[in-house]
Length: 231
Ligand SMILES: Nc1ncnc2c1ncn2[C@@H]1O[C@H](COP(=O)(O)OP(=O)(O)OP(=O)(O)O)[C@@H](O)[C@H]1O
Image 1: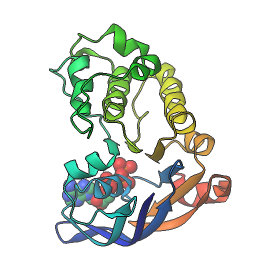
Image 2: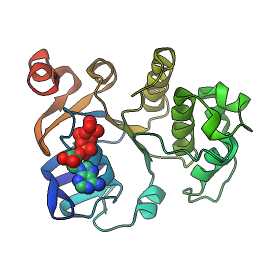
Image 3: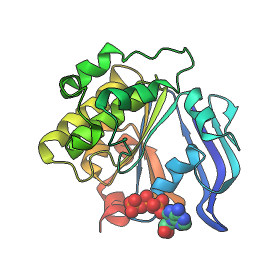
Image 4: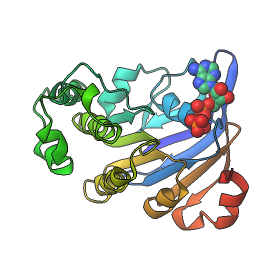
């Protein structure tokens, strides 16, 4: 379970995340929504320990994340797929996926078969350089790399942004399967309210670094969408 109370997070002296609280249960599918610049990416980076500092409480499975370094958070089972994917273009598909295994605590370095089952295209392209894949394939690779570490929770930052429409549905379906079939807790930053509505059982709307409104999936109404999410 991922929990925050009174959480502030800073870049320099600027508090970008302000007095945020949430509780995301094991197995939940939670979406973080909000207009550009409200702090969605910063919230994910805060959970990974990638901002300049925090105040307040942030814990995962009872462990205080506090000032824990990023690699230790990965070892606890928190996987992060940043916006822009950040795969290593000169590494092959295989090498990119194997990199994910270095956050495992059991020392296994093999690529689990279910990854090929979820992303058959990656099996076909194992020896291609990551940089030669399409944007959609790179996003699949970024998800595969995070899965190779055996995560309990996956943080995904706008995973379908800028991706060709025919691959968007495939990626969305995989994210839903990871949650429903494999029990991986999902924390998704999304501009696409349609997908957030279809997939989530919990939502958090941010506005100027604060939680404007939150609730269960069904409570994400058209009114909330009009007030906080329409441009
Ligand atoms: N590295 C940084 N240093 C200083 N300020 C930053 C940094 N990254 C983001 N910010 C500021 O933090 C605020 C929140 O940005 P953030 O990227 O978290 O928003 P977002 O909701 O994810 O937006 P988007 O939907 O555009 O990705 C913005 O005012 C932004 O300028």
